[in-house]
Length: 113
Length: 117
Image (cartoon, rainbow over all chains, first blue to last red; front, side, top):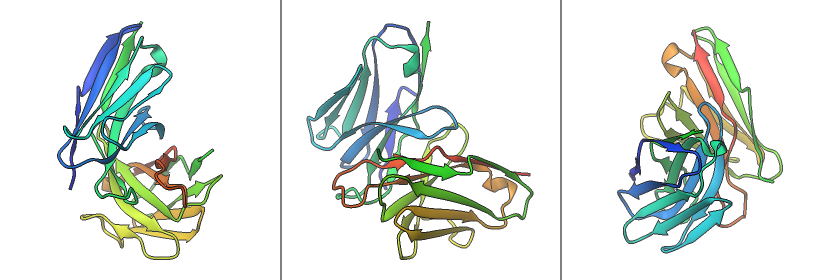
């Protein structure tokens, strides 16, 4: 089955600074999802990437998919306290997107005021 | 739109008790729902795929007799942890995909924290 490796595992960033989180898959990516979770709570959907080279943005968060490298990156510009949380990347194991997701172990983001 | 409601959000019960967790899609229909488990400081692990009107599909290592799944309607799936023991204590979270929505993301509930004493 697919494995997703996220880096870094944790990140402490001063408020206002930019940051990048990476997600690398061991197999072909059939769609890549980014979610945010506060510990012990549900997942908030951020973005879905399906095609190589695809890039999506929402407010100050941008995600890119490099299908050839089987990687995705999540970039936050001018970080704010509200960005703190655990960021998870998830992917399907099979083409079609009908199966459950495999998740990375998450990146714990702390924003220092 | 695409709201998934999970109930209860927190359960504490004695060892040997069976616990039922509900997952509802509030504003959309879902032929498929998914159940995940998350241990402290670890990522989500897919337990099973719940299919409306048919048997659930369980991931390797997940006991189907321990974790009973019923998907009786297009908006409701239930997970029953039978004869729960302390090692079953975990955070259980469900997700659902919009039916007929093509390439749609999974929308997650807020999770259920289960503590077995």
